[in-house]
Length: 281
Ligand code: PAF
Image 1 (cartoon, protein in one colour):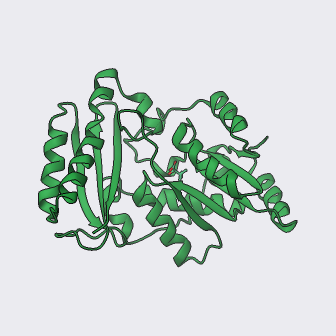
Image 2: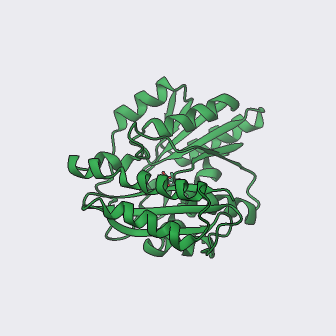
Image 3: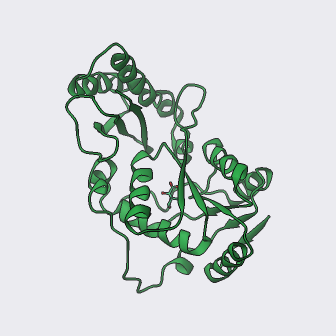
């Protein structure tokens, strides 16, 4: 397994691999890898000649009062996990190698990115789209694998690839959960033990929504209220949003007819967590 830190070296390696006919599967990450990331690597490993994992805590997707400086990092552990998982190459550049000091071009998705996390994290998806476009240019993947936990990110990246005709197939991998149902996330490591105990309220809220939906409830307001009531049972939780939106357009719905994304974001004192479920009518 190789590690490259220089973007120019990364790009010339990738162009050469593609020139000789090798497929490249990219798993973009911000590191502090967990089993959710490793399931994406496994998916890439199953069909790519070469698997590249990028490890880059991207400063441009964090707001000024967000957790860029405290985002968990553990290079040695990440490297060992990638080696065990059969990764061929880690791309781990420094921020100043990725962004010119006077960089003035970015990628803006103007519709899907205004909702859900985009409403509470202005500029977040501009940072994500820009870095993902750059990672695609630098690593020249045949396909890239993204986790379904970041449901809005996945839909925005699919839209970016469609609208900019980027020749990369976007593949998704299901949410991987802890034994109590908490969706795996690098930020879970920051939860104190009392917060960790209550963090299961996100999965419980989604369970409540899915059960009510299975019993025939089709009102978005009723499903939303059921989710909010479940989260209210966790005193340390502060809801950012609980929304039921069209699975493709991310527009709010009042009745569940076409597939609907039930997405939630909840603040705990030490971390903001997200989770989601798709309701198929
Ligand atoms: O999902 C993430 O970890 C990040 O948003 C991504 C896609 C690696 C871009 O920095």
